[in-house]
Image (cartoon, rainbow, N blue to C red; front, top):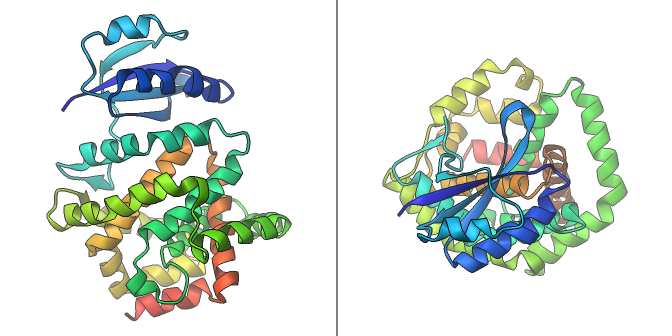
Length: 313
């Protein structure tokens, strides 16, 4: 299988129109698995990369008829999540395949007027889809701790962590009713709503990803992550990351359990989708914080206590 990449420069404001008017119709016309990625080009310019698997020979003719022309058509150069953390002979096809399966979700999210509300639904549905029911029991999906970890990492690295946390907490209070209603509907009532296609894809992919890590077709370089965390002095004052980093048993689980690594890769693909669809980093960090707080409130649990339980097995 080969992947072809089409490059379309686009500002943040131009992206929804480009996705709806050019990329989505082209994918439908080609009738091939495909996905789009958003990345920063030279000098901070934003561009969308449309990647198509086994593109037809007449692709140049079809692109010539587009209302917006790509600046390049080439063999795919960007591998989703390829880098210092994830690796393995099956990584590129695995990540591209999943993003192609969920491309309609990314198209929908990219063109939503209320992108933050749609992202809230998508992220919460993701938690339920990748969770291990045997570990969660009657409590919240323990996968919500990954959102807490993501938010805490951001808060810990801000110039004023206390002020940043206060701002997030205040914003959560302002929107608490809406957030809790969405989380309750998905996690307690089992209704993923518009995120049902993502939920189904993530549930189906979790066993495949787990098997991939078990046989080393997929690899997570967790040693890189541990070294990176040790070098970060700004995590020292963060209770969540201090506790997580202090437990050798927990670190061994996080770095070596194939099921957890599958969840981690799927969650990273969720973040790729949010980014490609125009959800900002700040929105993502806040939603991680808000969803985690809603889980704690609805299930009457505390993230630190759950983390402590995981640390001792």
